[in-house]
Length: 82
Image (cartoon, rainbow, N blue to C red; front, side):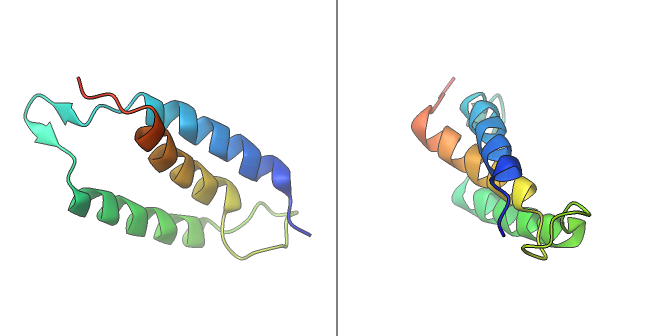
């Protein structure tokens, strides 16, 4: 059975963090390629982290993956340009 606690907490935490990310910080800029790289690296990290020892629903860290999704959604919804 899928545990919703880590998924909901990760999504809320990701939304908060994603709303605070600035796209244009002095000389560094996030491009589409950097977002794709972050997504791929996040999926690899979530796969290698595995689940919490008592959760046996998926072989991937659902909390980390939902936090990563929350960061992207928070960035899209609460876009800060400066």
